[in-house]
Length: 397
Image (tube, rainbow, N blue to C red; front, side, top):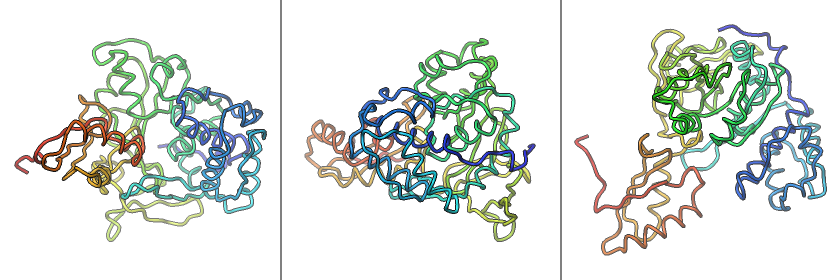
């Protein structure tokens, strides 16, 4: 892979910070109405007042807390009458006088957010290898949150480095299709691409619908049949692999091809055989334990397998089925629970098999568990289907 010099990748400025504040606010507002926050350019968002978005003081406090946790700042929560851009100004002024680190949060084995901190220069280093691959793009269509690490790297820093405009839209297949145009770099996740293909019936057809459009996907493996279907519609599809702990590790430009390590990443040897080695911009060499089972097909090529910590991906977010099962088992009337990811023919969420206590009213328990899960689990953790039986089904293994 080719690399650009690090000084060609811009540092975070007010526009970038504003886009992240907007992403955080959009996430908070989406809990009430997923479609109520229309896509706006950062300068348009900055000139609005918080009260126009319908966010109350408690939600604004959450927005400030999330931004402070990400940038290690102590910005004061805005009032409803304040300009949306004022919070970004506060954060930027404080952050510029710090060590310029950012903390992203991912699910941990207990279901609690796990902080992963990176220097800004480390993430810019990743973009030095990513930007040359998509240097011909003229605009970016971003469907993922920019305050998450994947969205920050690919949906914000990469387009800024290319000097192209950014359009942020909800991750809905119909909305994305309506917004796509030739020259776009579309930042997406496998779930959205799968639904996109299913909606259009593209697994059995060929067209020129994707001519001139590049689709970039990551966070979890994209089904090969989805990748091939998109290529048959003339889309260019690229897939990247990494972790919140280390960042982007490798990528591939063809379905089912081996992943190639980015230039600054190497395979560990000796006592670091279960790690990846990264040469940081300041020359420091750092080792990162592998978070996934990996099959090496060459010195710089690999095929990732399942997560070592048993996480699965739901909507691009790490979820731990064992944790979800333990929460369900705490409810009265549940003797045992097993949770797994749905098969592709079943859907895109988790599925729970519940063994009820003897003489339990199963229909009533089912209704109660749905309400219980809404209180105790996040949206991506909640099972999309429940099955009940007298014992956990087990095969010969």
